[in-house]
Image 1: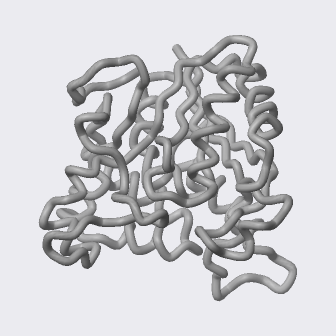
Image 2 (image 1 turned 60 degrees about the vertical axis):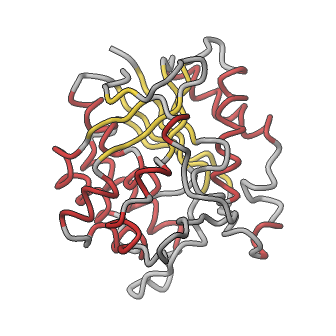
Image 3 (image 1 turned 90 degrees about the vertical axis):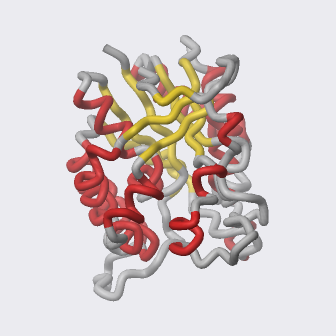
Length: 258
């Protein structure tokens, strides 16, 4: 069996985008590790935050709770600061992931790849699906870490299906006006066109557990909103997970990639 490392920008990103695949991998006997580039410090501040508790501490606790739901073997934080959304002042924090040297961040991840003898590394597509600075950085660091590792892992890029997102149900859910696209933080359409996607993983049989994984990140509004979606909308938006694999020709395969 393989060791698969899922590299995410912030705690809760895995729950919405790859948790179904992670659960299937665990069920198949693979060792699943999740790595977070940042501490998630600029997420929503929970109303019940304790006097000496920080947002990042809460989010780390939630990440461990989500790992229990998913069955993740190991949870690792690379130690960079959350960079915030595009244009935020936090983008200029010298300790932010956004400003980190690619090689420095990649070396930290490569150490883990070597320690785990990773077979597969899962990162993000070229614009992190929706343009968040930390998500964009994950893409670059993923490929550089794969180069630096003693044994080069197979690399997949988590993404969203731009064509599927254009469905009437999802447009209504996201308040996207008719004829317009769902745009990300960078002003570009969210995700990747289906013609450029390699793998579609059907996780509709895991929607209940995927909701649980999202609910584990209770302090974050987006995770809570997604977890509360009615079943048809939840399945339409989160019932499939998508991956790009460079060098593997199309069309998109609705199949298990591992």
